[in-house]
Image (tube, rainbow, N blue to C red):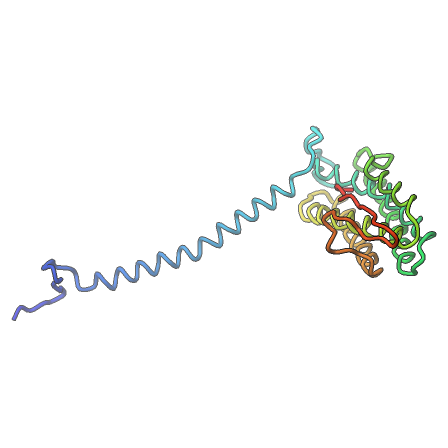
Length: 239
């Protein structure tokens, strides 16, 4: 009998170390563990890069980053101040109109919230613009003027549904912008404005949804059914 000390003979006659199989299994297990650890890290890093890319997707005004007493001011920060003001240029008159023309109490309630919220945000945006030397828009965009024209021409139930869904879509779109700015800005003035805007926009979304008239199936830009007809609501850009 041949004594096998520390070795075993394979069926093909080769000689292998006795612990080679166990060692291989251990190494394989360690490799799988490393993959399991590294894969989520890579995915997380990739996700973070995508979020950073999305957050930096502002229109570049060509002026670079400004150093201010309240911190660095990026093109996205300056754009945000302008968009807060731009939103108020149509939502403030729309809210006032709904407060006067709404038949449902919930619609008038939503109009009051839009009126009060954008009066406050307009003031804060003006203060931020003065502090940071940012130029603000002075009139609604052509798209916003089109929404106001639709509201002027609508009546009754069609008007109320049109108001609620135009405003709800616009607020839903700007809500993500506010979150990106609040998460990424390094400027204290912009951070304060974004914090307030986040509360106001969420309040408006809630008030609009409480009317029971939001067509959630058409938030991506489909037609909104009115009382005696169909009011087509164009999907909003960034207000």
